[in-house]
Image (tube, rainbow, N blue to C red; front, side, top):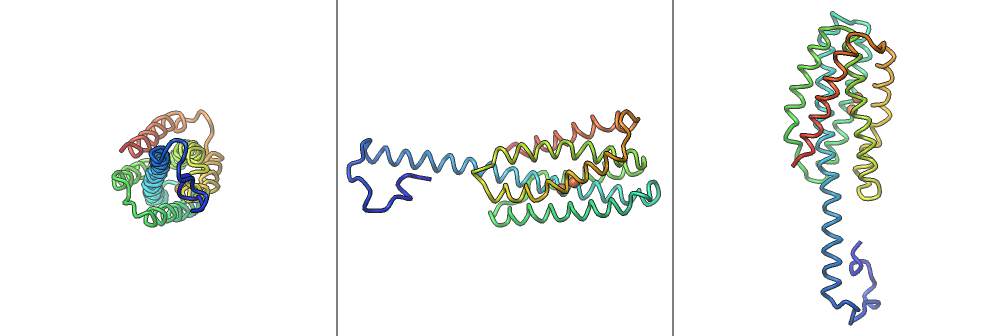
Length: 207
Ligand SMILES: [Fe+2]
Ligand SMILES: [Fe+2]
C-alpha cells in the first residue's frame, strides 16, 4: 500500500524528510510491484483456464473411445470431465471480472487435448489412467507453486486455484489406483505426457 494513499489528511507532514519526490517515487514503486503481481496472477489464471479446456478435451476424447475400449471407466471419465468444466468456468469468471482475455494457447490446448484423449482412449484403460496420473502430477505441482507465488498478494487468484486442488488430487489418486507402476503405458506415456504438459504451461506463461 502506498504510504500517502492510506494516511489521514491531517497526519501528512508538509515537509517530509526526503521531500515530495521521495513520496512520489515510493508510490510509483508500490504501484509497479502491485501491478507486476497482478500481472502474474492474470497470466496464471489464463494458463489455468486454457489448461482446464485442454483437460476437458482429453476426457472427451477418452470418453469417445472408452465406450468401446474401457467401458468400466466411462462413469469415472464423465465425472472427471464435469469437474474440469467447473474448473474452467471458475477461471473464466475470474478472468472476466478482471476484463482479461483468454490465453492465446486456448484453442491449441483444446486441440492437443482432444488428440491426446482420442489416442490414449483407443489404447485402453491402462493408457487412460496413466495419462491422467502424468497430467495431474504436473498440474498439482504447478498449482502448489502458483499458490506460493500469489499468497498474500492476489487473494482472488489464490481462492480460484485453491478451489480446484482437491478435485485434481482426486483425479490423480483415483487414476493412480488403476495404474500398476512399471507397466508399458506408465513407462511409455508418463514422460511424454508430463513433458507435453510442462511445455504447454511454459508456453502459456510466456508473454
Ligand atoms: Fe481441472
Ligand atoms: Fe483434473
